[in-house]
Image 1 (tube, one colour):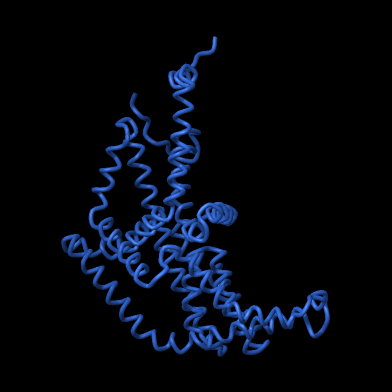
Image 2 (image 1 turned 180 degrees about the horizontal axis):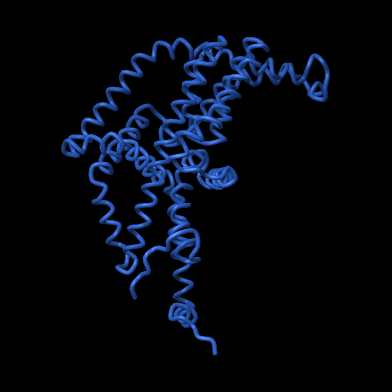
Length: 359
């Protein structure tokens, strides 16, 4: 004779309470979606805290942790001011010509496609008007893109405040991480505390290694791209290198997107420069695939390409562009939890099982 567990009997005997619980859960999920910008801001603060944890952890061995946090913040602020001060004149000289060349590159690409040499695209109506429309509305498109990239920063003041909140949040998180861990642990039933401790350890380990490997990869890719573009004479090479640096944070999608402005600018200069720029970006990705990934990411966290692309598509559909940006670190955390709780804990596969909860 079949028996029912107490939890199943509870669901069957109290259908109204179960329905109310489902409605409450749906309401909580809806509220989380409505405040997703705040949640994403908090997650970014956590990522910044992980970055700070590297120097803070080293200095905390020989000095108080609070002093190490202060030194890290001051050093980061000083380094940012120094980089901006040294790079601003170069960037300022490159940005204006770079923006001016993008419409020219788009027009040349459109002429190639419509071609003067025939082809199916030559039947498009009024190709010159398409190029003029692109040039006229480029500023509006850039403004619209920026409003989606930073939805909470519609002014410089709000942007500065947002960065300030991130830094302060990261400083508190890295100063006393054990305090927040103990606070969350208090919310866990006693029989699941051992599982919580193991989950915390694994997520922290994977996220820390992913952040470290990604920072190295970003620096390497940005440097290689800037040097290669400068060597072939592409204008705005420093700005384009910075775009590659930032784009590497988002695997595949970001790396490919960051190459588009450089290719357009190179095409505006000449078809030969465009082919050379294609070679530079191809070489950068070859270096990433055969040097950076095997050497750097071997000690970090490797994720399957299909899983990454699927996760980026799902989070992008729910949270927009910012969801795509944070998709990879969220997948890193989620995979560690699924491996521990479901694969090892529930299915008993894939390694050591977590501690068995006490009844």
